[in-house]
Length: 181
Length: 181
DNA sequence: TCAGGTGCTGACCGATCGGTCAGATAGAGC
DNA sequence: GCTCTATCTGACCGATCGGTCAGCACCTGA
Image: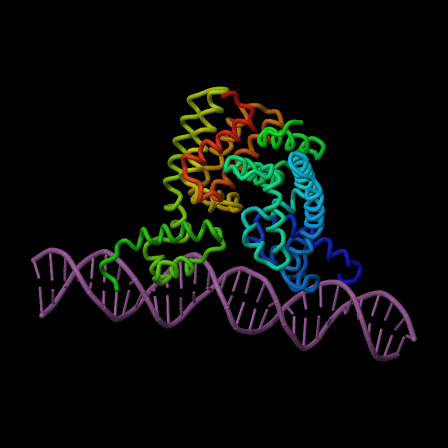
């Protein structure tokens, strides 16, 4: 059963996304992913240079959007930047629910990897924009609560359709950040 | 260097808390904990029946407070219960920042353990109380964003003293949940 | 027909994991 | 002095981890 399936690559990607989201990156073995697709562990490492490379390819689209959001925020200031950041991040969170969910709790670990090094700086700028570029501890706390809350939550509502989840997340973000609409 | 230290037990507990909060439960080995205290891995397993038992003893105080909060919420209804839940959870989050932080991302895994089985139901009741016992998706989303956001965030602000972090968290929670003060 | 490439595999590697166990060390009570 | 017990350790266990490698099956194109 070898030839008619070069689709294996994509199957492995989606299977990995599914498993990572449930049991985390460290908590998921290459064996687990292989089992879900119905191939051997060696096949996983035939399609991807390493487990890290698999994660990298999995996160690439989400990271591209995040980087684009980062530059878009930089083009605005003050409350404008805050709104762009909030709407952009909610969009991103809803679109890439699974990808974001799989970072839960392993964020700080995975950021050590060279592929994700610059994500740290981007997320710091994101927090700053959420806080309205204020240094007040209250603003920093609110920004991080909202940011982490959305990231943590979006993966839990796979039953709610995008067009309903997006405004709900945005509303709670605006209230928490005291943004006038 | 054996005898004058039955303090080893406590040293191991605090070292484990420190490591778990940084690298997570799965990401921390018994060897890591032993190294931090300066003893052998076998010593860790002399003081604690297993790695799970160590985690259980570590979380026991926080869980006791959580259970107490759960019964206290049950004694109230509607907006009262919402306020009790918010204030109680913020208190708990601030007091047990490290313990809560170490659950990051491994919550669903650790909940499988018999010791933590009932936590799942408690946290469901907590979400319901945060949502003001509403079934509206918007209320559910807001409740989970706030709850997860606080849990995720509290461990990040070890530099902010309790008496400053508590009102900041409570304020953002009340705004997000639209609770009138 | 046959050479070459693609997709895939089982067997294997060293490292590390949580956990076990026999025994070393030393203070306490007699 | 001797025994008992608490504390601690190094050596070891089986399992599992990510990763390597030689080779098999099959398709393609000359």
